Structure formats: C-alpha cells, structure tokens
Amino acid sequence: MKHCKITILKTTLDEELAKEYAAPGFTRCPMMREGQVFYADYAKPEGFCDEAWKAVYQYVFALSHGAGVFYYGDWIDRKGVAICSCNDGLRPVIMKIERTDEESHIDYEPVER
Image 1 (cartoon, helix red, strand yellow):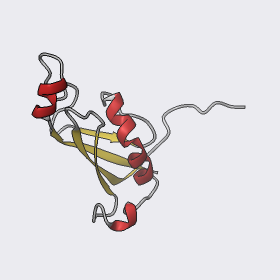
Image 2: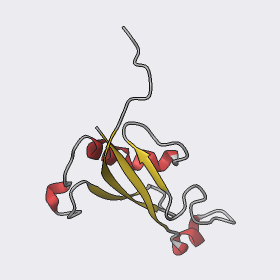
Image 3: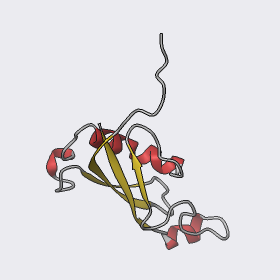
C-alpha cells in the first residue's frame, strides 16, 4: 500500500447560494487553505476536515491500493490521480489526490483474537 498526497487546490464560495442560504458572517472554508498538503492511506490525516475526508476517502483508499484511472478513463487522464471536492454545497474545497511511491506502514497494534 502506498501513501497518497492530498493537495488543497482551491477553496471556493458560491456567493449566490451563500447570499440566499448562509448564516451571517459565512466565509470560505475555515479549516482548509489552498496549498495545504496532507498524506494519507487508510486513515484520515491529522488536521484534515472530517467532512472532506468522508467525501474523498474512497479515492485515497483505491489509489493507495493501486487503482490506475477511474470511470473507464473518461474522467481524469492521469494514472494514480483524482480531483475531488468536499460535500459542502456553499463552499466546496477542491483537492488533488495522487498516489506516491512511498510505502505505507501500519502505525497501530492489531487486536489479537
């Protein structure tokens, strides 16, 4: 299993929807910033937004286990890469996930049965 590099590409704000639905003082995502880098494999990296992790973990898991291209090759044209966003409809954060050559190691003690 390989580590995946998660790069925050863009934080967005749909001003039209936010104007209609958001609470006063609503801004772009306060948890992630453009250019941040995280490394992950089977577990959410420290400091990574819980909701963003729910949206992208399946791509991290697939890439770390060797997935090449997704969706018959008609989505992303690079092997080992996915471009995803969190599921915040007012201020989605867009991320690039790419498999690295770095081997992952389990950092917990498995439960013996």
